[in-house]
Length: 298
Image (cartoon, rainbow, N blue to C red; front, top):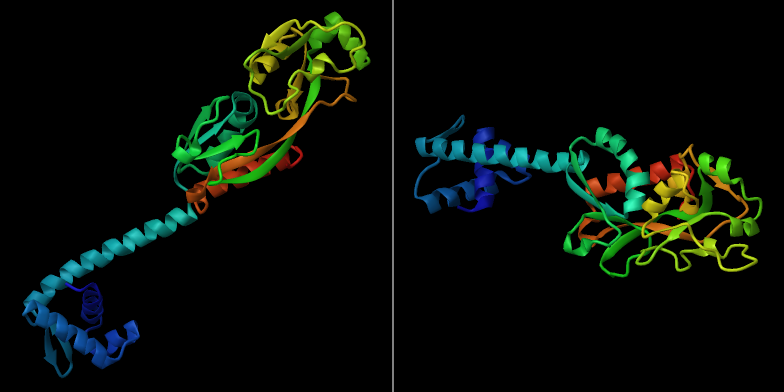
C-alpha cells in the first residue's frame, strides 16, 4: 500500500470528511477524494460509506483504521524520542585521555557531569598511548598534542605550563632553593626512559640554571602521574603541569620565576559525532571547568 495514500486515509478517518481532511493536509477536497478512491481501487474494497452528512468507515475500513492508528501512534512516539534525545543528552560516552590528566584533573570533576546528565553513561579510558577514535575505540579524547588525522574535529581547550614543586616535608628536610643554580644541590625527580610527553625537552629541569657538573636525579619515572606522586611524597623536587597543582594544597611552588615549556590540550572527536548532543554538552562542561579553575585557555 502506498504510504501517502495511507496518510491521507488516516486523516480522512480522523476528520470524517474529505473537506476537513483536505484542510488539515493542505489539499483540495477533490484531491483527497481521488487518493481515497485510488486506495480503495488498489485494495478492491470500499473503505467508507458515503452519506450526505459525512463518511462512515466500512468494516474493512475500520480494520485498516486500527492498523494506521497504531502505526501513527508508534511514529509519534518515535518522533518524541528523537526530539527528546536532541533536547536531553543520553547514551554512552567513552572518553580517553592520558593517565595524568585523567587521574588528577578530569576524574574528580566527572561527578558533577554525571549529576547534571544522568542519562549519559560515561566510561573513562586512561592511557598514555593514544586510542584511535576514528575507529571508535573511544568517542572523544582530550589530547596533549593536535591530532594528525584529517577526519577528526578538534578544539583547543587550555594551555598548560610546567612549574616547579616540592612537598612541605621535602622543604623542611632539604631547604628551599633560592635560585635555579641551587638545584645543583637538590634531589630531582624527572622523566625516565620510554616516557611519552607533549614537549620535546621533557627533562628541562636538569639543566635549568645549571652552573657545574651534570645533575643526577634521585628518581626517574616514565609518566607524569608517577612524578606527581613522588613529589607529593617528599622524594624530591619535580616539574609538574599546572593542571595538576591548581588545587594541590600539599605542594609548594618552588622558584616561581622559573617556568618550563608549555603546550596546548585539545578536545577531539570524529566528524560523524559533530552534531552529537552528548559530545556537545561534555565539550561545554570541560570549557566551563577550565574557566572555573582559572586555567589559561588554549
